[in-house]
Structure formats: structure tokens, C-alpha cells
Length: 355
Image (cartoon, rainbow, N blue to C red; front, side):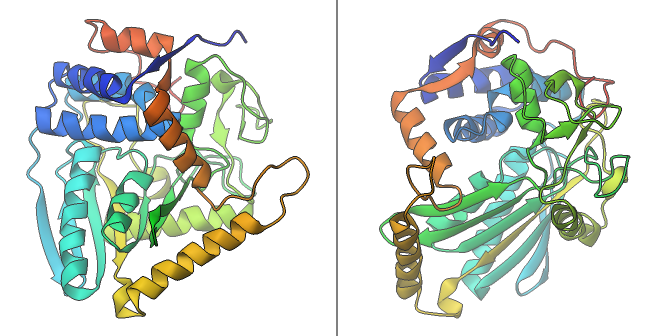
């Protein structure tokens, strides 16, 4: 494959372009601004699978009515430390950011918050939300559903989604430690990113329609769970906590990202926020996290590695670099963002892998 040319943009320019495009698709300014905040964060972290590559899809769904433009977001408190945010299928980034505000209020009051988000759209990189909570001094976990595109361990048909998990904790004198992963070897968005840049993928990420490993991002017909049966178990856990627990569709019944862009997604997500002060001295806790990071850094690296990093640290280093030097984006995506085209009408009616 011939790789696509890359353009480097300052974060504020990329934000402006994304926000403008989403508003052109009819998304209200407040939601468009929050979505742009999120997508720029993802691209800056090197999570290009959840960055500007998604704008064309979002714009098409918004324009075709599959996203509620003015959602009636409500909070149902079900206990001292539990509640459900009803998102009315608004723009996922906006809905889940509003839900996080309710969770933060609850954890401040009770020391613990388990908040489910019912009926939301695709909400992007979960690290965005848990990082915000950790910056307020809380330990945070988030999980969400995804549409079925993963072959279960020992199976031949897709059932669960990529069902990601994110975790963050405050750390003394440093930004939060943040870890975000799909329960597949790679997220579906990584395949999209490879397509947009005309790059091959490792043969350990996915299989084709015959069930054989593939390096062609355009031939992907099923993703593989991390660590075989263990990853399979994790994605089931996520679907239960972020979907079944909220009475939402689960497994193969979760709505397709692409099939009908006029229909709402009805996806589920959850936040678990914990106040360390309810368990230990919060300052000592953050000091212990710093000690852990320091001790990891002090470990002698194996051959071929220059440093031992804590999980998620490379994304932080990438963020610091890209925010200072500029964010690399595939040139066709930049051309689209700068054009008058709202969307290319290329996703509606497609299967799970946009084919």
C-alpha cells in the first residue's frame, strides 16, 4: 500500500475545523464544541482511531437524524451512590461529559458513585472522561458497549463489541495515570485509521471473511479478543455492566454503527468514581502512586526497549508532544474538514466494518 500524506495541524486549528463541520451537519454549538474537545484530545494522545477520522461518520449520522440534536438529558438517582443518566441519544461525547458531572457531584457527596448512562451515542475515547475525574482527585473506571464485531473465543461468528475499559488515578505532583484499552487486540477505529492512511495492519488484529488472519484493513470481517478466553471474558463483563444492567440491548443485539443512520444507537456506558479519602489518607495514596511509577521507571528495560513505562504513559508523552508541535492528521481528512462537504454519504447501510 502507498501511505497517505500526513498534514500537521495545531490543536486549536483542528478543533475549529471539527467544530465547524459538526455544526454544518446541524449539531448545536455546545455539543459540537464538546465533541471537538474530545476528538482533538484523542488525536493528540495518538488515539487517531477516535479522532478526526470519525468526523465524516458523525456528520452523516447527525445529518440523517440518527443523533438527537437537543437531547433531554435527565438524572435518575437510584441510591446514595448510584444513578442513571438518560441521554436521549444525544451526541455521545456531549451526553457522557454531562453524565460525568452528575457522577462527580455524587462522589463528592458520598465518596462513591456508580453512574450508568442509558441511551447515548458513540462516546469516543474513555480516557477523556476518567482523566477528568482523576484531575479532581478521584479514582475512576469507565466501560461502554460497542456493536458486535468480535469473534468470541472458539467461535466463528461475531457477537460482542470491542467493549473498552478505562482507568485513571491521581498521582502526586504529576498528571493522572490513565490507562485505556479495548478488549480486542485493537479497537475498530485503529482499522479505520489504517484505512485512511493506506497502511497494512498486523496479522494478529483481525480475520477476513474466511476466518483467516489479514493484514488488509479493507478485508477485516472480525476482530480478535485480547488474550483469547480472558479478553472474551472481559468483554462480556463490560457488556453486562454497561448494557444489561441498564436494561439495554446486549451482545449481537447492540445497534449497528452503520446500518441505519436515521435510527438512534441506544448505547450504554458506566462511570465508577471512588474517593480515596474513604479508604486511606489521600495524600499518602497519591504518594504511593508516584512511588509505583518511579519504581517502574527504575526497572532495567529488556533488549529492544529504552524505558519501562507505566500503562498508558506513551499516550501522555504523545499528548505533550503533539500539543506542543502539532497533531498529524491524514491529508484527505484535513481536505474534507476544510471543504464545504458536510459528509460523503458513505457509511449508511453498511455492515459492521463499513463495507
